[in-house]
Image 1 (spheres, rainbow, N blue to C red):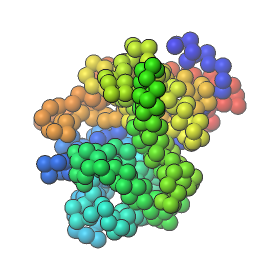
Image 2: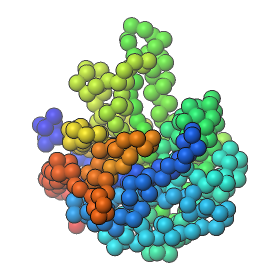
Image 3: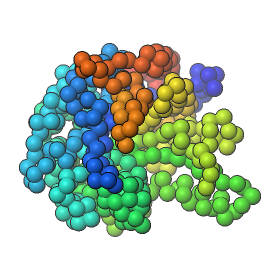
Length: 395
């Protein structure tokens, strides 16, 4: 694989979209669970009060592009009234540390007074998005990037089919997905009306599903399930359910979420990386790029515990292989970059580059991952600097 990376024969894509290719994301889920408890991971992880320190610590690692989130339920706790007191300090901390932030507007949660099934949800989300865009514009930030609704596929499954999180429905996943698409489209229109320079990242989980080739029915089922991963992007771009109003201009930057458990046997176990049935991640990236022709950010990736370093190494190598086949990979985001307690709150998840805050409000650095990222930064710079002149990094 090293030879493939270092000696690719096709023109290598040169990323230019983001301030840094290596990126970091802060967990910002705000969903309401089945037991009625609302999560707020920005608060629980300490990032609410440590944003300035967190951003500065990442800048020391040469990471200048981030994913972070607004907490709509705290900003609009009262209908129609926006309280920016929790968001502006984060925005100003990002500016002080020269960070480019991709802001999630809705990460699985919304204010209690809104019913997601009603048309008013679409209207109110668009109004909120417009207010955010106007505020960010007035703060002097040029060409911001927003994620209107994060991982629509997951939210539709968890909230519309499995009743794990609000709206706690079953057998309504498709209907919820379509409502979320309506809201995303309306939000993008509202943001563009406030700031024509804005761009949009649409992150979705990507998977591969394998079935025994001696059972045609299972093969057909597995492929149908695999192709369903494209439904959100197809809806946004107008390829599917055109009545929703999707069109090509709504699919801007594709975000890919990919984890060690993202491949499995149909009706069976996870496919491990050493299994001959495991599909190389580079080919998944290539399929997405060939399908849509849009730039891609690996927007959510990482592993737990001792898998953190080998996993990021694998994802980076596969990203480079894809880039050497002219696939437009624009960034790789370690997500989450800071440890937090699990959604159930019962255990600490050692996932990130930064540890949990200590009693002094400081985070430790997971040195093995930091060293790996520095090595990757050096390798990528060398690869890009050795490109033919027409592909070289602009000044």
